[in-house]
Image (cartoon, rainbow, N blue to C red):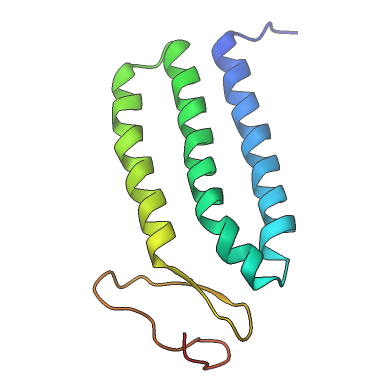
Length: 117
């Protein structure tokens, strides 16, 4: 059996941790119907996901990737987290999570139940 390098271990760890984080997010966040919980924890989930991704990006850099990867990842993760927090809306009536893809206007009505957001 081939010995795994440190870079291989970081890569495998990334897939396992990211997969478990996605499963946990689905089970505890998206399957729940508590709207207040989802509104309160969505920004924290976005920030923690970004930090987790940057942690693994840093580990990849420490194990041989070029530092330019990290320099590209930091602003990318910041923009993605900001847009996810800013453009995600939760319906108070049915609990539907909606992501506004139009940056210049807001969503007025829930696409699922039609309630005013």
